[in-house]
Image 1 (tube, one colour):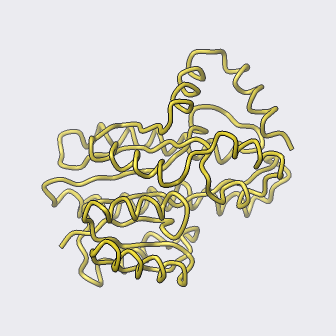
Image 2 (cartoon, rainbow, N blue to C red):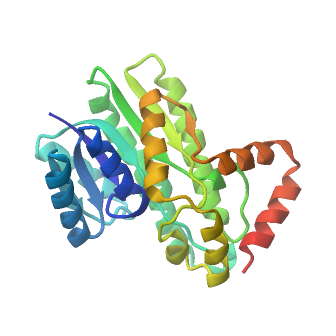
Image 3 (cartoon, rainbow, N blue to C red):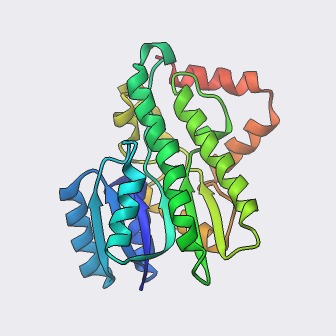
Amino acid sequence: MNYALITGASKGIGKSIAQALAAKGNNLLLVSRSEETLKELSTFITQHYKVKTDYLAIDLATADAAERVYNWHTGKGYTINILVNNAGYGLWGKFDSLSIESQNEMLQLNVLTLIQLTHKLLPDLKKHPRAYILNVASTAAYQAVPTLSLYAASKSFVLLFTRGIRLELKDTNVSVSCLCPGPTATDFVERAGMSEYIRKKSDTFSMTADAVAKIGVIGMYKGKPEIIPGLLNKIIVIVTALVPKFITEKIATDLYKK
């Protein structure tokens, strides 16, 4: 019996992806920090979608998180044919004003745990007739974003890493895609410590997490390399690639200035 493993599954885009996959009949392994929230979601999905679920409450920003997730799923005998690396967050502020400890923790989650979990699960994914990896980045991956410098850099890494291993795996059964949402109605702004002014601007252009997840899951099954939900986000990414960097960086500076 196959399962989809989803990190950061207790809320936001991860929660919505979990439900979108369950709606397609996938059994789920839900991984996140909040045990109470995971338990509630697991019970709801099991009852509503009639699929099997299990969950692991763990802080994925710790150095041994991927090892612990891998040991948990293999110890229970689960087989995984879908890996969704969704867990991640941002920190708002100038690089030298934020503690290096907090930024290291963010990079551990956004980059290192994602890499390590992917590396550990790839041998298992290759055993299936068809398997999928969906990494969640951001439209921030396409440009520098002052006051979110490391966050944007981490998402750029996720995007380029995804495209790289996608080509490495092109002759295998494993399809690798990157979901790059723009502003989404989650707790990202609050978790990053952004101002109320930025939150209001973000809300103006935000998509719902359910809409992003639906597009992401459809794109994953179609084997798309990059999935950018929403016409406005697609236009922004195209414009970012065409205009001089100093222009987009000036816009980002004005938008996210602290």
